[in-house]
Image (cartoon, rainbow, N blue to C red; front, top):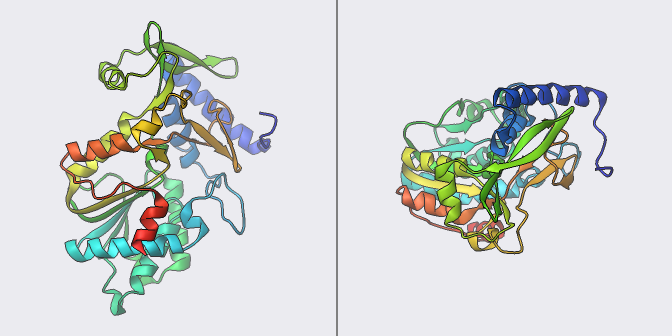
Length: 331
């Protein structure tokens, strides 16, 4: 941990407030919470969690800053290429766009600009560009980005949502959304499956394993036949999101772009310590119990599980490839 940058005084104060909130939740839960709940609070606690507080998260290749850089921040070419696929879907469905967790709003701005360039009088731009965003802070950041880059005619087509619509046609976009959904950590032992959780340790936190008692989660993990000693993440909430999207979709396509593996790679015997990663000021490390509220926490995505969830909920798998392949295929 000595290689990580030291947080500022104000950042430490902010983190301590979140630590106290999580410790309070642990005390209410008789001294232990599962990691999924810890991750939920660390990332999304109202006014304190990483994505709900005012610190800069998304870096820029020119100006730097933040904790990480996503593809839309690097170049508008990402959105321009993606727009080729979006246009095909919009033409077939006469639908709209729904972006899940729009980050800084850069992807939304670039997509709308790309679509506006395709035809006069904004004929290629859908009536609505919906953004599902749970963070009030990021909503404000997104609005400022859109106001800086778009005409009023385009801005007025953007609408923020608190929940998924009950019915939708068009294109759903999720760029690095699934990896930020809180995941459980499972440890396979000689005595059965344990769930890794978090306890209070002085002024901070420590790990503690307990027997996995969630029967649904237990049954799903057992299907993987993981060897003794194996440690991995499992994210039923990601599957739940896909099921909800499937239930919502009438006509269109869902494009999920993220870090992850097929199940064969995800649960490879050599990947026996999981995929959990933290990002702080462009340093990557594996210690989520420190710098609480100041760093991003992610777990790679099991794309096989995501694909099966979609198919089992009535969707048809149209593509399953690397981001590079997808972008090249889109032109």
